[in-house]
Length: 406
View (cartoon, rainbow, N blue to C red):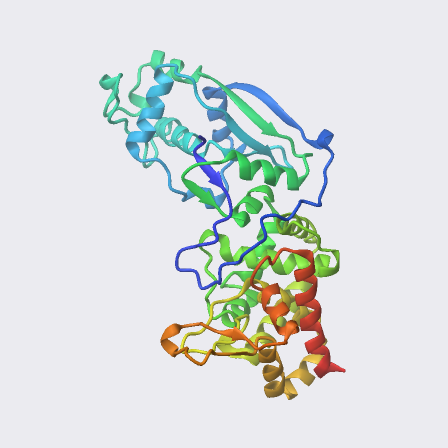
């Protein structure tokens, strides 16, 4: 079992976001040519790997730097394994556009080598001090600088095997490999994987969209009432959702959602003028949502004393469709704000069963004979990645907007 896991984490602690139920049975309709998969098996030594670390040729994504790293005794036991010339598990890297290596699997070992050898060699802060060694107890309390030359050479000459995913391998394939390889204690979200695969201006732009210290980020946090955390890059996941549907259009969507978000991230323009247009329209969409709904934007209407959490599919639909509105259309909707909110609530209109009470929380039943309402609720609640549900929720909300803009 490898040491890092890459799978979606729907239950992010303290999240103000409604868990999204995505249909896991959707067949991937983004076929790829197996000949495009380029995975090289590369022999290296520990010393060569450390050299690459020293010259910043190995990239540890920011989100992994603070991930749950090994305890000191675990790090020491790994170093002891190198002292004993024990076999070391495979390392997995993905090649970036500038041919640096992005860590996919091996974070704990890479971080330990950096702390023990590089920090120890430079006598920098926080070098690893060996402890709890089982077989080479004479080195307990020692740092790298304390080791004799023979032991340093023994560690550096350890042979390791690296699987390197070539940069020409399609991103959707890299994503699949990334998510399948890592199967252990540190759970990475889908967005964290995308961030690892797109080093550069795309991720910088997503950060700019939702960062608290930018105009667009200020609007985003105001519209969402700061309910979407930056922990585990949850806010970037929302930004990715907006970008993909804004740039690609819901009309081009086909499953699966992850492949679509990868394509959307890839489509982010590098020209500042184009980026600024997106930023402006996103910012205006956020303020418009806030002006209409206040603290209830992007949430299902609440029929009890508790406010519902942010719904990701509602955010997707409303942010994108609001961004496409003209100023004139926004003004028309604002002029009929109360009527618009009433019609929006009609999309969810439900009645409580006669024996329900406030203490029952959200026990509700749909009105009978209203398939349109039921279908919209389902489209933002269950199996949200299905193409028919993606199309329906966008077109239904567009129809609502057109009632006030035509």
